[in-house]
Amino acid sequence: MNATLRFDDSSITVALVGCGGFIGCHLLRALLERTQWRIFGVDLDSYRIQEFLSNSRFEFLSADLAEPAVVERIARYPVVVNLAAICTPGRYMAEAAEVIRSNYNHPAALADACAQSGSWLIHFSTSEIYGKTAADSSALVEDESEIVLGPVTASRWSYATAKLLTERYLTGLAGLNWTVVRPFNFVGPYMDFMPGVDGEGIPRVLANFSTALVRGESLKLVNGGVAKRCFTSVHDAVDFVFCLFANANVAIGEAFNVGNAENELSIADLAQMMRLVYASIKGKSESDVPGIEVVSGEAYYGKGYDDSMRRLPSVEKALRLLGFKAIVPLKVSLEESLRWFIGHYEV
Image 1 (tube, rainbow, N blue to C red):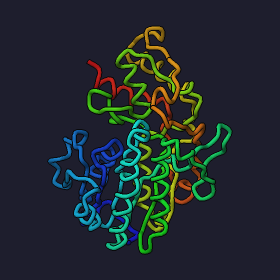
Image 2 (spheres, rainbow, N blue to C red):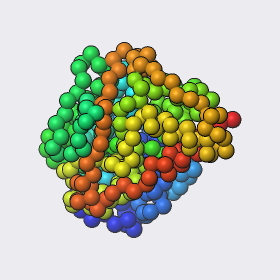
Image 3 (cartoon, one colour):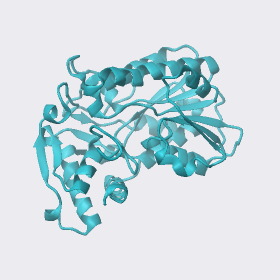
Image 4 (tube, helix red, strand yellow):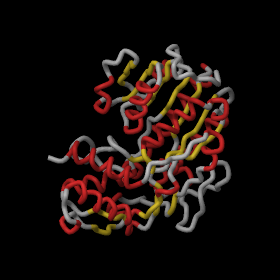
């Protein structure tokens, strides 16, 4: 793998797997705007990227990683970014076997192909690999933190288990140039879906709350919303990937947390902040915005639900090796996300 990737080198082609998803559509835009590279994009959906389909530097293939011929073709390119995953909590319980296939079997096959071709595989994992952390847990360090997952009967952990096994597989695969990215709750425009409109089931928390606000329904707090998360702008996430591209020599063979440790709050506080942001956007008083309702995890997600109580990233490694630090404040990210959601879905 050439450690120097010049953004003005038009001979470079990047394979972007999951280019039509939430993160993928933002990264695709940035690649077309900030580089002279060509992009080979793979996804099953293209509705988020319609404006790019006619770009001469972008080739789109409607397919997924379950097809061996597709995997082989992806691995022909020198840089492969894999964003493809089933990553909504509602599916962890209902479709555990398919979640494992999506997050282990398919990425492992892609890793095999990249090891054979010599491609650099940038694999998006998850902060959930850190497992069932306690409310008083300290910052999670990439190469130090111990990992405890929930019991087998809690199928909530099917996703984390598959993602963790994929990381183990990448690190043990001879000849593979790999980098692992562990996202900490990326948020922004185009995130997830509205149930019953352009998706089924239960999306992640931001889309859940946004849907409730737009529909005039109460915001449901699972188990009281006491768990804490750090929310990170998708724009910071894209900037991080460009830091990887610019520092391949130190990024290969490393796993990185990508999160904003300054944007930590409880899910209950997130719900209240979103109510206030929505009121501001709509020019309403807080009393005119839907309220909050506490529900149990099992009632909301189904049997097998479990949770991590705090997920705070150490961000020192990304700063030290890549010079990267997330900078977008939480309120800015929430307002941008909610404005897009309102504009896209509200009738």
